[in-house]
Length: 242
Image (cartoon, rainbow, N blue to C red; front, side, top):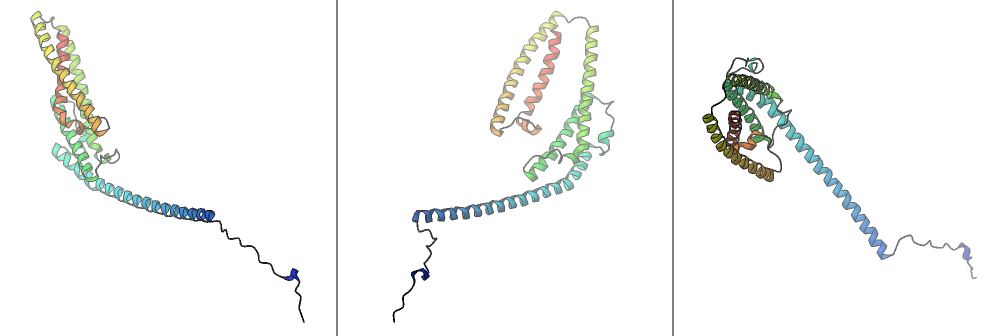
């Protein structure tokens, strides 16, 4: 007996959804590989950022600890070297002192402030910020008081000098000639120093990619700088005679 099968009841095999195109398979593999690499890269970057953040946090803690421990000690040591108490920085009278003493004291205080900056820089490879200098505020106040008193005395001395000149007879011809001769020599020296300081400034800018900002920046030419200021003052005095 022969059995006939109805074709409608035969299950047809569905076509496969698998892409057999070699170029598309390669493209899909490439996209999958690229995606995996991107994820790995992001993960690595996150680890680096986390590590840097941790290092930065540790450095900040070290710097805060240094300021807490060292700044107070250095302020006390500075006051001892200056022969003052910390309270004297804001209370000491500066009225009845000579101008020369004020200049010398100002220089001593400036050296103490430089010492703090250099100690911080040696420990952290950078200069302290304004906040990190805060513990030395009493010394900065004293420095500003000295500077203000110097300006006040210089202004008073200049007024007295001008008043004295008005009462004096005009300088003699021989004195004027001598002043002119001296003035020419000093102007020449001043111009030479000015040129030297300018070259140093240009070279400093080229080497460090910034302008001169700190006292230590002019250390190599500090003597020349002080002499330049002296010459300006002396030239101004001689010009008043001529």
